[in-house]
Image (cartoon, rainbow, N blue to C red; front, side, top):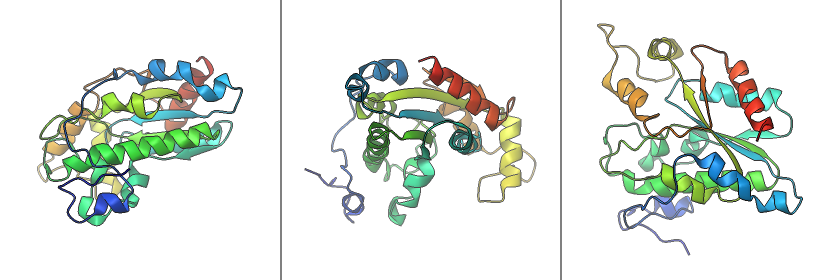
Length: 238
């Protein structure tokens, strides 16, 4: 059954139907998840329809959501975007920013809840894929917390038996800052003196630190539509 973390005094994780980890995460899977997981789908073995889970990993404003929308528009079959924005929209206020917590170890009080939130997101993505729906998971994985959580190493377990493509979404820092400065939606932009804030630099460093991608795209060089086409080509070859 579900267990509530001792630190979850307000019961927020119980309301989310999540399990809060009581101890340290033990890494069991390498970060290159697609090659590890995609071979063993029981749905495919049984001749049943099975969708893909495409993980779009990158810093904020790198173009992940735009790629997910391009996949939904241009790709065959049914696609849904089930990532950080969807999870944050359902996260209790006291646990925000939830899985969107930026690198730097700024909120150690939230960190015990994060593995359960990531697990819920990925298990839902796996459920959708097993029903035949393709899922784009736009997310920013890092392990720059106050203590290592080892979340990325567990994703292979949560997506076991599902077709997975792990995509690194890169974007040059100058372009990221241009998008941040023009967004007007609360993202940290350039400082008054034009310098780049430390949280932005931490994102750029930490989000791709582990690597292990099946494919990488760079949205400062190609459009989201072209990046989506590159992803579809990679899927067709697997």
